[in-house]
Length: 94
Image 1: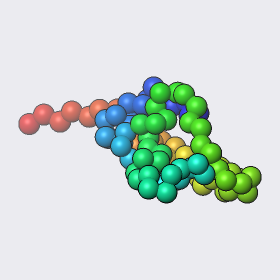
Image 2: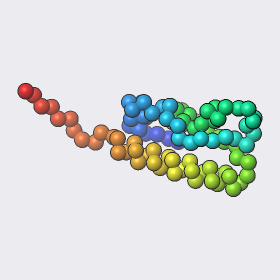
Image 3: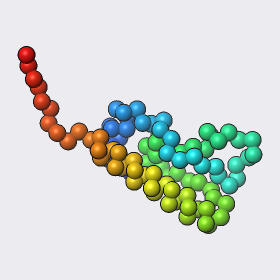
Image 4: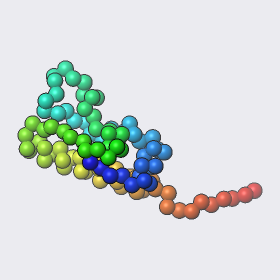
């Protein structure tokens, strides 16, 4: 589960990041003919504040998935922080 601040949610919406894919993943119980796009983790899946569950085949794969997910979320946090408007507005009149 990811808890975004109000400011982060606004940045995500303003920049159109809801459909941004974070990780390609495929659960252990997925059918062979299931489309890969069905299992992508996108920003919109994390916006509702609900837990995102994912089934891995082995404990080792679970740990690898967790590491990848945390790395992607850290990168996203850096990007959101860098894109926050922290300065004041400047108006120039001619």
